[in-house]
Length: 112
Image (cartoon, rainbow, N blue to C red; front, side, top):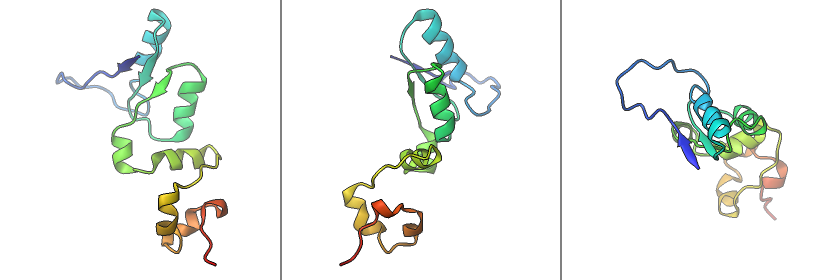
């Protein structure tokens, strides 16, 4: 598995746009026939799913997006219209919280 990132270690202007480093993973994956992980402003589930489903990389690596949204896996699942159950440890904290309106009914702990 190769983490395909330019590393941003050389002071040179790099155009930054959604998925701007995915082409590195895609080229290495296909030319070297080795598993790759894509990075580079991957910010939503639909974008990540497109990269994986179209064989552009084998894995998505997230960094800054997880700092912006520590619940990114849950956010991505919702964007893909998938249901992901809440971790049991979170249910009591989220129930009755303003975030409750964002939880699917199956994730809520109903008070008896």
